[in-house]
Length: 299
Image (cartoon, rainbow, N blue to C red; front, side, top):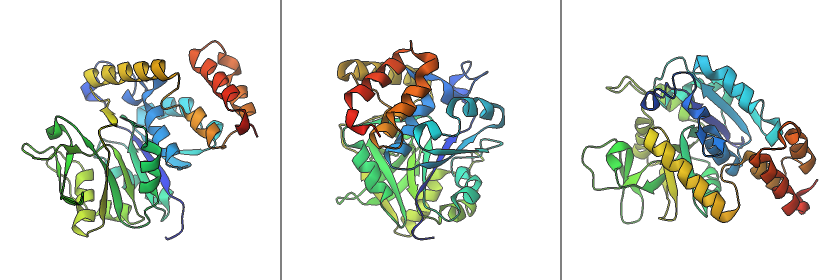
């Protein structure tokens, strides 16, 4: 339905098998990436895109832990809802699970193990979110494109083909795990057939939009960094990156409280009240500093 606000779908299911044994007792999306749980970074992408009503999809055994961590989202001025993905049946299944929640609204689907950082990231997210028809995906240069979904572009940066984990490709434009869709996405996802992996592939959904000439690509320049934090090596690399940037800049990356405060979704008083039980943590000391540095945002 036209005119509805875009809603978010945050997929944090799966078994995290590439991270065993770390994920035997805990979801990978709850593992630390330096000073924050992994899921904070993907949640922050939705918040930066001005998405405030979000469905968090988890596997059955981990949902209680996510609710303990994230609550209902009111501490960040957002609304969090929860749903179950019983089995890891593919990324595109998230849109089918979310159909009732979306209720005809456009969506932004984000994978819970993705971390994106770049100077103009908010601008790109808002531009993609402003599209009212079709789908918009991002594209980021990588050295190992065969590990990801890859989009080939023509001379005008228009998509030509999109392929999942190609064995051979001339393109190095990988597709990060954030996708903007119009209201038809759940219906399109339901029309997909399972791949050889037994999954409903998000690349197949994107290909439908491409074949209908309704797929746009937002090309991120070389000033962007993207981590798929699904392996031990990439998890450590992401933590080292966050640590280095935060130490150099004196700012936090993927901090929901800061995003909510600067957007005036929450008051300084609300942030301070939520800090009272953990005043000694470096994270909360930063929140106090952030509030003091931005007094004009006090409501």
